[in-house]
Length: 237
Image 1 (tube, rainbow, N blue to C red):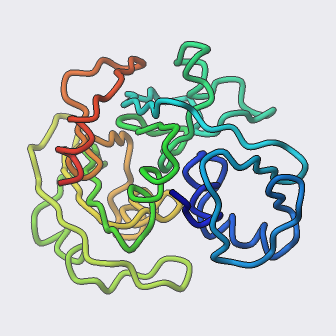
Image 2 (tube, rainbow, N blue to C red):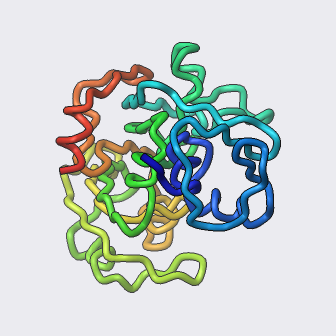
């Protein structure tokens, strides 16, 4: 069975399908030693594919894990300016997995990592609009009327009008703090923190508890679990 070259590259986890298309048009992709620039070119599973001179490898079995990222760990595989990365939390055999999205250094909670490029695309591409759920602690005693603006779809960030968000005040805490659940279907850089700052309720704690139907469950901070095919199928259904 033959599939489109850009999809084959994305399925390897090397990059997104769109990025693969860019690499192809730039002449950086070879199939069986020949440069391929035509989008839509189809290849079989045995084709030798190179990107930027490096052979693309394909895992025989796709692996996907859920990780409960602690604060202070960055979501990148490597950063010379940050000694703690999420890869430090995984055994060596899982350190080639790629994250489906990110959490900033100060935040914690659910991350999905996978060798399945197609799954990563499904979880990260805006067209799929997977709802992400967070629990945050904010400074100040907030009431529903104080946070109602979040649901209006009128807040702008970097010149972009954000989609409406859902919120639920869980409870008030001592020292003038409030625990709130936030749901959104996009994920701009530090979106929740910046939005809450802009309406006068700075975030002092942020945890992602779910990505679509994938949830944190009872996964301890810093731990991971391998997801079964059934887990993934149920979460995407």
